[in-house]
Image (cartoon, rainbow, N blue to C red):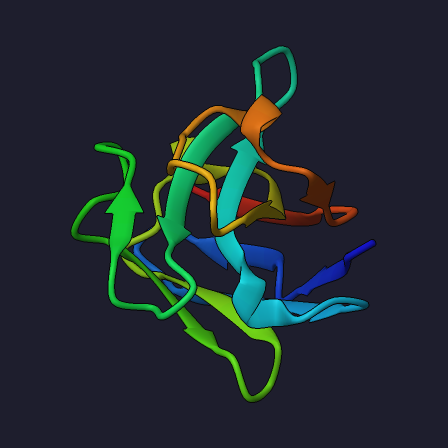
Length: 125
């Protein structure tokens, strides 16, 4: 089992920044590809970004490319999501997730085995 705990969410004005963190425990952190997803009311959970176990490969949804940056620190068992130039449409609950690194990368939520409880991000206009 992998336990994931997100933090760093909050209320920010449009154009502002937030940094989300996700602390992992329970298994070897570097055995997992890590991803960030988000879900707003009435919508399906959607892919935001992912990062390989080494941190050398990252993927982003088109909607956040150039504004969000995913990174990880394997020594601290933590993955981050730096969010800049936030827009009201970024408002959602943000979740981190873990997927065994031996599997082919995916943007599908069902492809991830472990999930955090989520952290709310609200961007006001």
